[in-house]
Length: 426
Image 1 (spheres, one colour):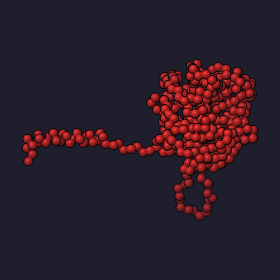
Image 2 (cartoon, one colour):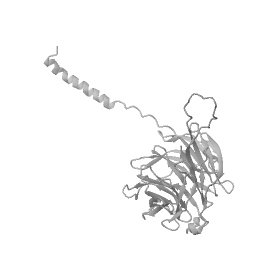
Image 3 (cartoon, one colour):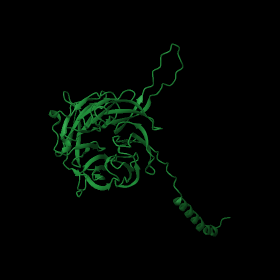
């Protein structure tokens, strides 16, 4: 029988047991999160240099920030740029039979992964290669090769519907458009535009790198998938073409002058809000900020989009740097709060914070790239790692990215790979 005195005596012990139970919950080990999957990564290398043979593949461990040993995936000429397309392949039609058969579920379309590779060669070897990708094994099966529509292709984009592709031919001074065929390969060029037409595209800029004629360096899809934006390094202009993704035809271009003569516009990156755009000037080592506006055509008018320069450029190099520099790559993170760029010469990676109200840039960090000539960099799917290809030091460096502050630390791995030019996570 529980008396009042006995109950009072037991209360401290009960309270102690409760505290012990709470403490056990506090210090209990939390279950470990499932490890992130290890995606397949492809590297394009400069085959004009000894030791580089084409496209290499590796696995990336986002839990540790480390690559496996790269393996040769396909031999080809100078794979400068890589792009992935996902298409559905309709099942083959079956012949009709006279005898009625039991109803079965209709065959479903199959998803195919297609890797497009820009081969930056000469007049006979410049082209675009299409490979069927086996995501499980990483095997590449060549589907076909077509002319790039010009010499020295350096950039390729696929519209978001996966029906058309657009290529910039740097050495040939042209761009070309392509239809995606039913098997995922590309057609021969549908439209080709020669930027040597000075009546349309103007005259070259003032720098020696611009004297030999136009150099379209990128064909970037607009956020609404209705235009391509072409940065011409030699003519100091940005041309915007309306596109028909179903036919791959190009409309009439509208041109926009960049900030200053000799700037050399190379690439452009759009902010997730689809209004702000950041143009990277290779020769001036500068970022120009633009406001982007797209307009639907009225009766009798062409589709048109406008870039308005807001007049607040920022330098990508340190004011104390003395030497020749060529800005290379620019990237806006999907969260829209940071911009990253690379410099060849200063050999650096630079971080800028984006003002959420007006899109202006504020310097946040400058860090050595861990090698020489950081031609291209990208981020893994988690956004926690930045991968930089250092073309002239034959290395790929891995940096930790801190999403809250945007800053980088590392490198935490330096991977040996001859003349990396491009890195693509699939």
